[in-house]
Image (cartoon, rainbow, N blue to C red; front, side, top):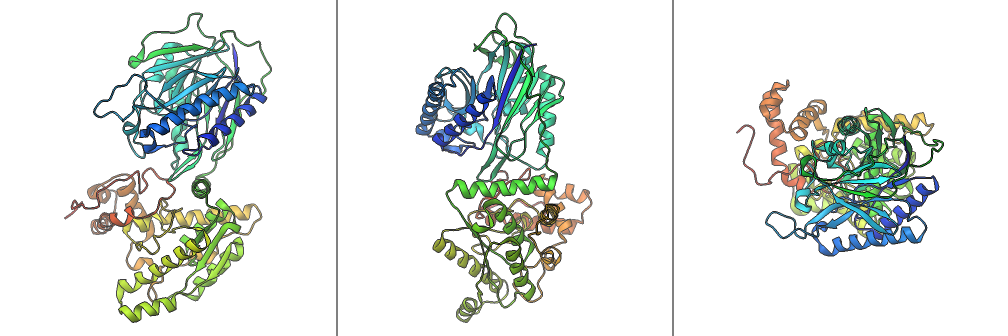
Length: 584
């Protein structure tokens, strides 16, 4: 059987950085060529970064993408890499589409091109456009209508983009009809908990449907709320894993494949789902047999807690560095939430770039300050203590606040202090709220909700404890000092805004609360279904009422890393003014 050395480059692109992304692809192409690759591939929209959102509707950006693609092709040729076919994802526009109601202005395309000998010899657009969860691709793009097939060293390679594999029909069955020996899909598939298992089963199933070896190349890195975990996969026609890339890291996954020879006559015509075969031959003659150097490696996979923690680190690091910042500041209370955020920040940007401020009030316990100091000692982050009592007393003397207003004043003073430090010293503020608190509205506007980024925004409270324990355990296994003091993990959670306050004064036990929230928020279950799952009706009604009435707060919370099937933000879009209730 003919052989082919495939180079799958799972890289981290930055949205809008056309020059930087092109430079990265040139560097990784050279790396692939030095290792004898015959076909090089990069992820979905790697040239522009993903997702570009409304930049797709800006004609100047579309034209800049097209120009950057042409320049990349020319540069690859100038630098001696022109004979190597390179598959690149980019933003294009349809040349034929006419303006029509319901069609995105300018008819943009989520496209890919094969670059060879200084030009794009084959271009195509994503056929299936996702319009669920965080995706709005019907808003931005028009669909492609071809099955692109590239003949490389006597092997026909069918090409696809992300959702073309996730949806039934289209390019997968068309690949079988066309008789391709390899199906290569480039992707920018955002991370979710346990999605790696779902993705593997999908690729296995599609390989069997396509009747050929299938390669699923994924992006890595982070963009705003989204994280991309890599995890590139190659399976044979029976769904057996040949190679699998690492998670959350840039990598060139090289694999030598034995593939069926292409038919003497190139496939043509209109086939499954009305797709027209667009065939281009780069090299028709098979390669002489060569020694297999890359039979396929399978990187070890992270366990569930390590995977989620790494996603949170990746998301924060991407947000800080890609937005041109070097350092972060957060309030360090001694509690579990800020302790975990501090640990994540140290791992993301280095302890030397993390600034923590303890801001005790008259209600702060001695152990809270001690726990904050201990975390600072363990991690080596910058730490200072700035009591809020003088400011609090001044406000109280002027306003005479009581009850909830008095409690929230403390939080808002802390938020003001952090923003002042941010303005003065140039750090960005991290908000420490978790998903349980945000769901129930237990977040003070302009107080603990201030910040540029919320690293644990999509993690329920029970997950916070689990990740803290994992991080400490991982440190111990490496012979390092666990970053989070044990007392921060074991003491009852409390905002410490009044004497003796603990979270369970007004909320159910987190193990119960989080399960209800997961059913309501993540799975869109109603009251009756949640009660049927074994929860007390009055409790469910109270929790759902808390969630429903806090939408206005969540709308004003900063972005944060998405790790669940439905995070607050792009995933879950509910009206703020809303009189619908599960139970009147």
